[in-house]
Length: 500
Image 1 (cartoon, rainbow, N blue to C red):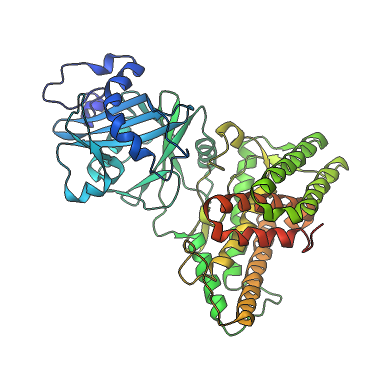
Image 2: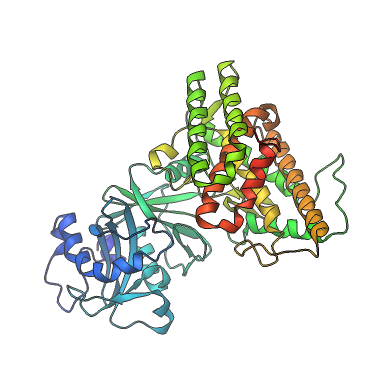
C-alpha cells in the first residue's frame, strides 16, 4: 500500500459519486483550472474580507495550484493557491461538505455554484479538526500529490494528534497538534527558499535551545506553503507578559529601587530576553555568512533611511517638524561608516519585538523568523546589522509601557486613565521609566549573552531606532490612528526633543 493510500490521501480529484476523471494525470495548471474555477464566485468576496488579504480592492483571481486530500467517505480538503491580477499568491485551505455541522457554520464561505462540487458547502478547513488531521496524515507520508513535505530530520511526523486552530492575530494561520506540533501556514506564499525555513533549519541543526525545532516545510509547485515546528506548550506571550508587568508597576505606590545588584521584576525578564536574543544571533552567525559592511554599504543604508523618512513625512505630516534632526541621525550613521566604524551584518530575526518571544519556564524562546512580511523574501534573507533587531525590541518595550496605560487592553483606543492632567503626566512618566529600565536591562543581557554591548554603538542604535519609529508612525497612521502618539513620542525623544 502506498503512503498516500495508507494515510487516506486521494490526489487530484473531488470525491464525487463516481470519480471517473483521473485529474491527477492532468497538468497542474489544467487541474487547478478544472477544480478551482467553479469556486471563484464564492471565494472572491470571502478572500477580500480576510485580514491577510493585502489589497485595497479585489482583482480577478486565477487558479494557480491545488492538491485534493480526501475520499474513502471523508470530506474533501483542498490545499489551493490562487493569484490576483498583480501576481500576489494566496494559500487557501478549503473544506467541502454536503451539509455543514453547526460548529463549522462560522467558517462557511458559500455554496459551490457549478463544477465537480456543485451544490457542496465550501468552508475554511483550518476550523475543521477532521480535515487538519487528514492533512497531517498526508504530510507524514511525505507527499500528497503535488504537495510535499521536505523533512528536517530522519523521523516521520507523529500522527493521531488532536488538532486545534491557534487563535492568534497575524497574517498567517496556525494549527496545533496535541501540544507537540505547530503547523504554520503562509497565507501569502512566495517562490524560492523561505527565510524562516532556512533560519529554523540551520538553528535546528545547531540544537539552538532558544528556538523551536523544525520538523519540515510544505511545498507546492515551487511555493513554500508553510512549516511544521515544535510547539511550546504552556508558553506565555512576551507582549502580554510585559504589558501585565507594566500595569502592575503603574499601580504600585512607588518605583522599586533600581540600584546596583541583580535585576528585579520584569527587568530580570528583559535581561534574560537580551541573553536569548544574543545567543540566537550567535547561532545564526555560525550558520550563515557574517560580513563587514563597507563604507559604501553603510552610506547606501543611510540613504535608504532618508528616503523612507521623506516618504513617511508625505504620509504623516506630524513627522515634518523633526525631519531635519532625524536626517542628521541617519547622516551621522553614514559618517561613522566613512570613518571606519565597523558594522557587521548577518542573518537576523528581521521583525523582532515582544510578540515574537515566548516565556517558557523561566526562560525565553524566539519564534516567527519570517522577517517583515511586506518585504520580499529574497530581501528578508539578506544580512542585516544585528542592531536592527535590538532596535525593534527596544521599541517594543516603549509600546508595552504605553499599552499598560490603557484600561481595556492594547487593541482599544486610549482612554483617560487618570483624574486630571497631573495624574496623567505622572502615569506617563512612570510608564516611560518602566520602559527605560527594561531597555537598559535588555541591552545588558544582550552583552552578557555574547553580543556586542549596544551601548558601544549608541549612534548607530539611535539611527536604527529612529528608522523603526518612522516605520511605526506610517503603520499606525494607516491602520491604528489612535496609536500614532506612541511612535511620535519616540521620534520626539530620539530627535532630541527639539525641532529644526
